Amino acid sequence: MVAPELPVSPSSLASCGSPLATPSLAVPSQASSSSPEATHGLAATPSQKALPTGTLAAHLSQTAPPSQASPPSPAAAQSPPAPPSPAAPLSPAVPLSSGDAPKPVMPEIVYHPHLGCRMYSRRDIKPAVVGRFGQSRGMVGEGAFAQVTAVRLPDNTVAAAKVLQAHDSEGPLWQEIIAVAAVGEHPSFPMLYGVVEQKPIRTMLYEFVGDKNTLSVTTLQDALDWTGTPSALSRKTWLRIVRNVCEGLLHMHNVDYVHCDIKADNILLFDVNDGKKTRRYAKIIDLGNACLEVAGPWLRIPEHLINQMYLECPQMAPEVMEGDSPFNKPAEVYALGDLLIKIGKAAGIRRLRCVGKKCQHADFRKRPTMAGICKKMSKHWK
Image (cartoon, rainbow, N blue to C red):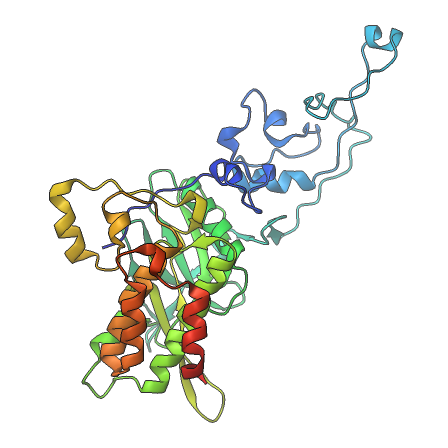
């Protein structure tokens, strides 16, 4: 079961002290709607084309040439100018004359000025096909709030197109983009290639984690179901997967972020061939619920459903399930403990089961940190 998504708006992230939540990340709905100039902070010149409304367009408008300052009024010219106040709002800008206005140049490839997010048009994205007759592979994954389809980018790169299905997808889009920017290019997370420039449906283009020849994906849950079959993974492969997951969560916690939905279905496996041997690795996906720890969501579950939730979501910490604490790092360690216990049973690694039980201690203050877990497991990874 997918945890309920509680979007955190950029403004709430700013109140929590996010290093990424700068005033430039505010969505247009939070800006003044008195005029387009107030929305973008600039006055549009007669020769400039109006930029499309939207959060990313608001950021791109910041790269436009600065407009001239408005001339002082006659009353202000008679009195000495007062020093500007830091909190005083900027005076409205006066458009440049048509003769002085520079000709706007819109590049074909537009990058987000802060988060490096490339914008793609719908015509740039083609469905990925496989097979002798080029049949479409179609959807490769589906969740409560999104569908994932295999597509090809203009350079023929296979990507995973995550189509957000929320009624208002602008908030979830920005929450996930900011979380992806927080984890950066860590190898335990798929890269974000860009965003499709369309509304109201929002589509994010991620690195495809799986077999690009067959366009198939393998989750950690699939690997757990292989136990006792010829497809079962080796002990060394299981330890490598555990290392990828633990190092990814450690990186998130070091930047004060929590994933909020760690489970076997949100971990994808992929193979890498170095010419001599094929090795299997893991990446953590679905950062749609990820947020700063200080903005962790609270759950309000009716008492008559708590027992059912314990059965359906064994990775959920009891203090979060019963509404005594928001989702935080100790709760994420509890969810990791559920994974370690399952992997330990499937791989026959007793050490993993022991660490997993410590992660699921009833008292959250006695659970180990991610740094402590990685330190304990490091000797088994070598």
